[in-house]
Image (cartoon, rainbow, N blue to C red):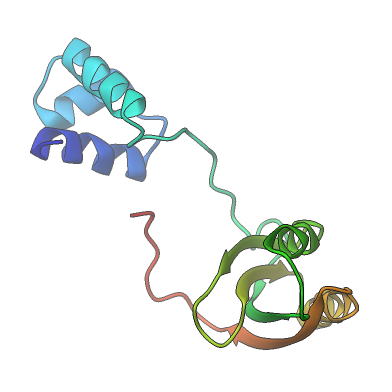
Length: 144
């Protein structure tokens, strides 16, 4: 991957719907060259796919929190994954090497909705307890 590829990725991060012509103009290449480079980035796995970014506020999910999830003894990764996947408000989740066994990013409509999510998680058999941090404002957002 060279600087031109990085430029193409930069433009696609800004607008994944950019035309080949726009990308070509931004990178100083012919559209056919940009198309070949994008195909190579896709084939190598650098570009894993294309998606839409939703506005959580417009969707009524303005309250965000990180929930530290502490698994009950004997809980498998698969069981914990299933428990977290079953909560539609959880938009991302990771296993951790910190205090919690996992961290879940929750998007809820308000604090009452967030509390419902927390209580649902706490009633789940494979979860011993949780620790929640409500997120206030976003300082940095980027994909990679």
